[in-house]
Image (cartoon, rainbow, N blue to C red):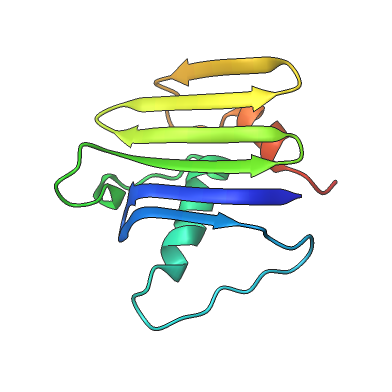
Length: 114
């Protein structure tokens, strides 16, 4: 189950933490240009390594996206750096300069419904 999403300097999100998500269906709603789609793009960054350099908030060097699930956590810092922090049953690992492919260790943490 997904427990938390944290976006820092990611697109329009200066520091957004979403907690207490429900195990099944969660609905994000709000005005246009409020940041709903940015949440989806943050999840895609973590799960598929899709990143647009314009996602870094104006005036910042890096953005950070973090998710915590039942299987652990994945945190990514992108911009001038490209660092992935994974915590799972094997412990904590840091990866740098991943390239364009998704990271298997991140996928393992983020796939909570098989």
